[in-house]
Amino acid sequence: MNRRLFIRNAATLAAGLPLAATLAPFSPAYALGEVTEQDHILGDKNAPVTLIEYASLTCPHCANFHKDVLPQIKTNWIETGRARLVFRHMPLDGVAFIGALATECFEGDRYFTFLDFLFKQQQTWAFGGDPKGELAKIASLAGVSKEQLEKCLADEELQKRVVTQAQEGKRLGVQSTPSFILNEKLYPGGRDYDAMNELLEDAS
Image (cartoon, rainbow, N blue to C red; front, top):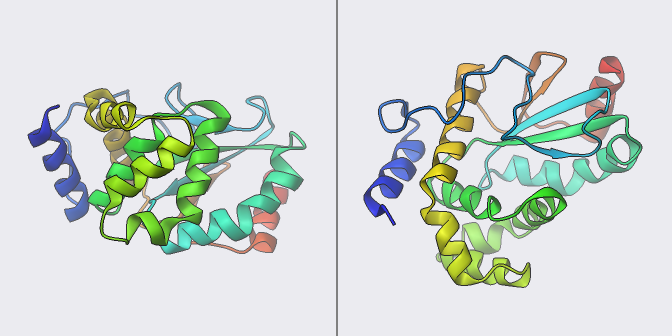
């Protein structure tokens, strides 16, 4: 494990500083609204509407969106094939960075199941004083051992993926979390379901 690199990446993210000098880009820069091969997608990949979310796992407003708003979007838009959700990390601090790396242990639906659980249990794992220990407990319940989790946290390619998502988000104008991209337009800040539904209707 390149511990120095990991600590430097987490500290740089926490300070909100550019990371270009730390890591080379993981993928080419993409345009506003473009979906890449590295993206995690919830729903039909051919859905006519794409909602891109930038969020931090330690952001209370992001947690509120995932607990109170996203379930309705899933029911009315994603599960019906009308829209797909693309989730991207924008870690606000080192704890969020560690959490983001933990999610990368999972793929497909398991990724989003684990992601939602971290948002629901945000107060417990992110602010309880032992984020890595709590993440290990949660990951084990999801079928990932402590050793597998440590491997994900130490994986430099996964670190680059998370860092690049944050870099690209800033380049596209994301300044706060949560922020959403819909029809090549950026919408900062959390919204209730009615407001999000209106945006999705306008985009469809």
